[in-house]
Image (cartoon, rainbow, N blue to C red; front, top):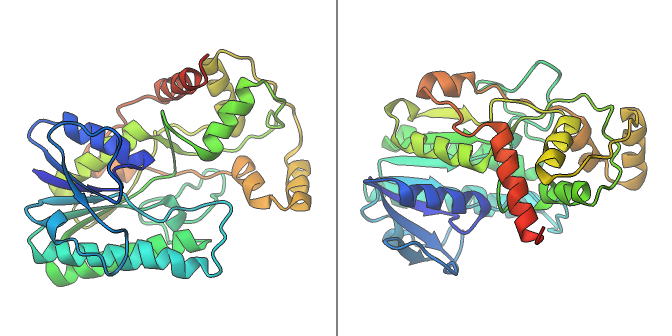
Length: 320
């Protein structure tokens, strides 16, 4: 099997590349704007100008069996574009369409698309997780662009016979993680008081090693074609539980304060950080029973182990 991987220098892409390189019988080609500092031996590398509708993918897709498309314009908290939806569509929809069309033209059989649980929405009611067949309800331009990309790919599949597989992960973590997850580890490491002891929400997460294992299976499994799969570790945590698990792995005792959720939401509203606060207080659960059943898949890395490995990386990075 010959695989083209996009986004190989990103957080998920780096994990995917490492797994592909370790897999017997898999040839790997990556398409990147900048060469990585280190590249495993035997990897083909094709330079691209970027993710746009004008990009020529001919060299990248020639001789490829499966495309794993992990490159994207990702969700950011401090969005500065005047028209974010147009910017997201240009990369996540139009550039993806061009890649898929050129892939079909040279005989690529399967296209695995890394989407997002934001296609489903931002929050779930307690005990009502998102399912693979849940109605899509994106709440921001990023989620909307991912939904439109999925719809475009399935329409192209009907026209051409391309085998499209969509995977929607929630928050992905693991060694190398940045943004809010890394910030939370930093706060816990410094033993800052955090107001989450009374928060009884449930959040689905997915370790990068679990996600890339699923993506590789989706590249191969005959039953994956034409399906949408949700990804998670299979064990949901409250924000308080996550803080305790991370603290244990970091070797510190958490300082969690029992502040009522209503008070935190009010503070979030007054400070203009309602969305950030809600992500810590609200629930977002995904049901991966369909993923398990159709693909006979189980997340290979337990939550405790994945958190421990992430915390170990963080401690080593900090020299502790």
